[in-house]
Each structure stands twice: as structure tokens, then as C-alpha cells.
Length: 365
Image (cartoon, rainbow, N blue to C red; front, side, top):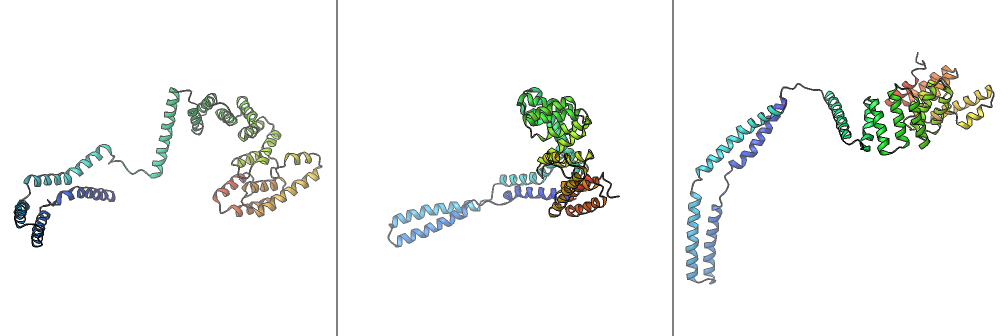
């Protein structure tokens, strides 16, 4: 009801805008002409009295102005032509009747008056899905006509990956390398697509792409992670752990892939909390069991002290709780978990990340 009232109001406003000029009687200018002529007669009398003009000139001027004054007065009294009245009436009828009729006709033809209400969220999701599919189809058609468009392949490939079309993504990544040239990122992306197409298995073909990526850039983290995953899939858990620990040693605290690597390392079942550097790990190999345990516990306690000062480090809490669990200190693990939830409890995203990372430890039971 409110929508139709708004439409009616808009129609009335549009009609009023059309009718207003038609309803106004535009001044013809005769009234102002009569006033001017009368002023001119007064001016002639004033000039004659002042001796500025001769009596003959004054009389001639009065006659001419009088003639114009009579003509203007007669024209002002004449009624407006009937044709103008008829035209205004016709325009008014067209504005009041024709405008709404035409508007309703156009809406009935081009609009959807019978369409039921469609929730905004569903409308947006449906529109997004259709727009993505349509854009992908357009890009694919363009690349079919121009297969050497390297930029097009580079844009299309990651979109195909997100859409779950891994085989097509592999082809797109290959074409991107062919027409754009290779670099570490493109090789790593191709390796990831090959692994995804194989159901998550890092095949020999995928591994060769990751090796090639690291040969181009030793700091290509995606390639390094998947090589660790390949080692885990081959049963070489120690090699996988070594690769992933080295990644965490170099990682910045805000690195987006840190949680993934930490979870993968925890999956191996090793004490990941201390995250020993290569030098420390080498030194630990020469220690006896008691000294090594003392060193690890010391590192864990330092981590706990640091987290008391900076409780926003979710990865640090994950390492601390897992370390206590691996060392058999279940009470300390539960206490650390409670402290972690209290520290990040106001941040829903971090709390969810914490709970996801620790749900396999069974500390809430």
C-alpha cells in the first residue's frame, strides 16, 4: 500500500509540474506598455515647461504617444484566442490521464507487477552467483577467441579454483605461465591446482611444480607448505615437521598462513609449542633426555610469561596449550586454555580460531 501511495504521489507531482505553466496566464506585456506611455506623456509636459522642446514638437510627440497608448489599451481588453484555451485544456487532459496510463502500460510491459517478495539476502546471493557465472562465461568465450591473452588466463585461473573446477584451473594456470612467463607464485599456484585436481594428493607432477617454484624463490611459502604435505603423505613425518617448523620460525606474527601450518604441525603429534629454531634443535640433539626436557619446559614457561603480557597471540596460546598436553600437564593445559579464552574472549574471530585449533585435545570434557 505504501509503495502504490508513493507511485500516486510521484504521478501527481509530475502532473502538477506539467499543468502549472499551462494554468498560469502569461502576461502579454500590454499593461506595462500603457504605464510606460503615460509616463512618456508626463515627461513631455515636463520638458515643455522647462523649455527643453518646442510647442510643435511637444504636440507631435503627444499625438504619437496617444496613438500607441490607445492601441495598447485595446489589445489589453481583447479576450485571449479560443485556440489557446482549447490547447491548454487538451494539454491538461493529456497530463492528468495520459501520463498515468502510459506509465502503467510501460510498467505492465517491462516490469514484474505479479512477482512475489524476494528476500534481500537470497536476491543478493542469487545475483552474485549469476553474475560470477556470467562473467566467467564471458571471459572463457573471449579466451576462446583470443587464446594468447595471458592476462585473461591469469584472471580466470584462481576464479576457476574457487568454483571447484580444478581441471579447468590447471589448464588456465598452464596457459598463464605460457603467455605471461613463469615465476614462483605461478608455479606454486599450478602445483596447488594439480594437487586439488588429484583430490588433495601432492602428486609427482605437483611436487615438481613446487620444486620449480622454490628454485625461483626460496621464500615461496605455498610451495614450501605443500612440500611438507607431500612428505607427510609419503610417511616422512619428521621431514614434514622440519619443513613446517622452519616456516613458522620465519613467519611474521600476522602471517595469514600461520594457523594452517600450526594445525598441520600439531597433526603430526609432536611437541610443537616451543618451535625450536634450527640452531637450538641441533644443540638439543646432543643433550640427554633430562636436559632436553628441562630446556623444552623452560621455553614453554617463557612462552607462558610472554602470553601474560600479550594475550592477543592466538597461535601462541595454541602452542602453549598443546605443549602442556604433550608433556602430560593436563591441569596446566586446562588452566592455559581458560586464560586464553579470557584473553581473546572479546574478539569473536580469535575465540573461534582458538576453539577450532584445540577441539581435538579433549580438554573441555
